[in-house]
Structure formats: structure tokens, C-alpha cells
Length: 447
Image 1 (cartoon, one colour):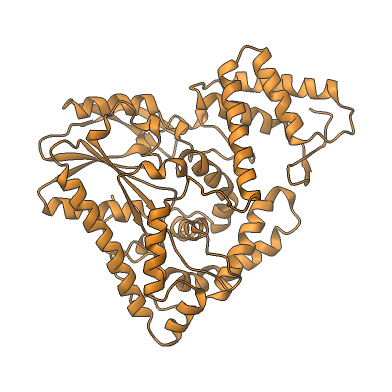
Image 2 (cartoon, helix red, strand yellow):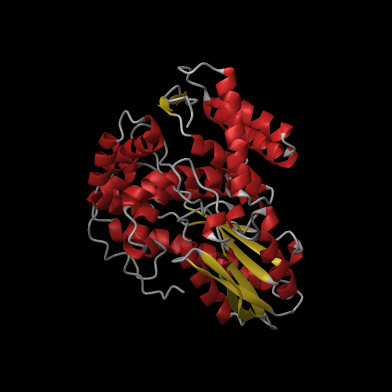
């Protein structure tokens, strides 16, 4: 039991002091360098608390930076240099991101595929969907079905291009990796790509990466005690690399099976091998993460990156954020397919976002091809589905320092949905649309 009752966040908010958060931070840093000892993380966290108590009076409210300084000191003094280095690097990266945010993006971010963004904006301007006012006007004129047709055609054209690029390299390719942040449309895009390549005489052999999760008890947790499945270190990257290398060389491997009900992984369950005219298909958040396939030469991989790069400006002159589109998509999908309350998705999103900023977005420009999966018609569809809920969440979390992230997101999405003209009839949306992956009604059979 610590003598501290409160701590101060970087925003200046005063929140309850939670010793478990220190253990979680240390464990996450250890996991990033291959460690899996939760007991040791707990012991080191206790040393941090003892040092804090020696340094500060009982009624003192330690700042998060003061706590992190002592975490660094304890890790180094107790012989955990690799973990300390990872923790220091994480702090430095976070500081750089905050500094970039404060400069209002005066320096171009390497996390953004600028060339693709420009083409997407150009398309939006040509089709008069680049502002909320413009798309509202088209909807009021009864043009919603035309917007759907134009957007779906653009998406399908991108997949035609990707398939042609893959076919051109068929002689040397061993695997295709479809990657992108949460709810970017990987499942539908992968299926549609597979259909195209089958017609070209190629065959996909799927590798389900979820089977490579470590046992749940070995997963790192976030600050609220939720298990973090979003980080690449939740996966057994060493085993994935070993299997990919063997498969690329023509060998057979036995894929493990991960039981999500028990949180346990069972090794050597399903035999897998790729033959002539077959390509291994990997649909994963972390397909572009360097350590995911470091043993495989670039010539044997084709990497596709997906992101809903929506180019639509709101009345306040701010562009709709891609992360907000994906948040809504995941809420709708999880509530239907996983019986997951949309509010839980909102509260969970802070570390979905944290992990992708560090482990997914920095590698988007290493992809061989980028697909924009946004549909300008999706925002009008979302209004009637979720506006009421976002209004409730904005009010509910107002003034709660522990839920500041959720409150800010809810308020921002409220403004977006309030500005758009609502469309409740989704019948013009094709049954095989990427949006059906999230709103339901898809005619595709998801594996």
C-alpha cells in the first residue's frame, strides 16, 4: 500500500495513484525486448514505490515524469539495461509525438502516405465529396446511390491494380501481407484480392496469425488493467519467423491453435505447406512490422497497407480524422460479431491508438501498395446508428481525468455526426462492400 493517494498527469489532471500501473509499464517494456516475467516486473515496481516514498513527503502528488525518471533509475541500478533502454526510447518517441502535435504538423509526418492522400483528395474534389457541405448537398439531391457507386468503383480499381502488381511478381513471391490498423478493412480486402488472384491462376494459403498469441497470462496490460492484444509483442514473433522461413523454403510446419475462451495456445496443431502457384496469405495488424518477417527477403514478400484515408472537411475547417472512422467501424463490428459493448470499444481505443502509432503507422510507407478503404458515404450511414450514444458518452465522461481521451473523442465524433446529412437506408450499398464488414449484411463468407 503506497502512501501516495494521487499523481499528476502531463495534462495537469490529478488522478488516483495506482501502483499497478508502474508494474504494467515495466512489464510492457520488458515484453518489447523479449521478457515475460511479471513477478520480476512487480518486484521492480515495488522498488520504484519505495524510492518515491523516500524522496517525497506523504501528501506529495508525484508528476508522471518524476515517476518515470525513477523507473529508469531502478531498471538501470538493478541490471536491466535492455529494458531501461526500451523504456527510455518509448519516452523519447512519445515526447516527439507530443512535440509534433504542438507544432500543428508544421513538419510533414512520416506516418502519413502523402502521395496516396493527395490522390484521394483529388478524387474527392472531382466527385464533390471533399466537404461535409458538398456531400450533404448531393444527398439532399437524392444522389446517395451515385456516391456509393463512384466510391465502390474507386475501391475495386485499387484492388485490380494490387492484383496485377502481385501477378507480375508471381515467380518469386512466397507471401502476401495485408496490413493496416484496426478496422481498416483487411478481411474484405483480403477476400476480394484472393478472388482476383484465383482468376489469374494463383492460389492463396491463409495463415491465421491470431494462433501465435502468447498465453493470456503473459500479455501486457494497459493502465486500466485490460489485456493488450494490439501490440506486436503479444505475438510469438520468433515462432512466426521460424515458420515463415520454413514455409518459404518449401517445408511443412505445424501451426499452433489459440483458444480465446481459455487464453491458451496449443502448439503443433495444423500442418501447413505452400506448393507451386500457391502464395501464403497473411492478414495481420503487424504485417509491416520489421520483426514480423525479418527472416524473409523483400523479394519474396508483397506488402499491402490499408487505411480509410477519407478526405472530407467539416464546417469548422478540420478534416474528419481517419482514426474516428475506424473507431466507429470497430464499434459497429464488435457489437454485432463479438457482443462487445460500443462504450467498451471507446474506452479501449486509447491503447489501440497508442500501439498503432508506435507499431503500425511508422511502417506504412514500406508497403508495396496502399489501398484507401474509406467510403465517403459511410459517415451519413453512421449518424443514425451512433450519434445518440456519442452524445451520452461526451456528457458522461466530462470532467473525469481518467477518461479524458474517451471524452475528447466522443465530443469530436459528435461534431462530425451532427454536421452530416443522415441516411438510414443502406440498401444502395453492395453486399460485398468493405463497409458491410462493419455494418452487417455482407454476402461474403468470412473465414
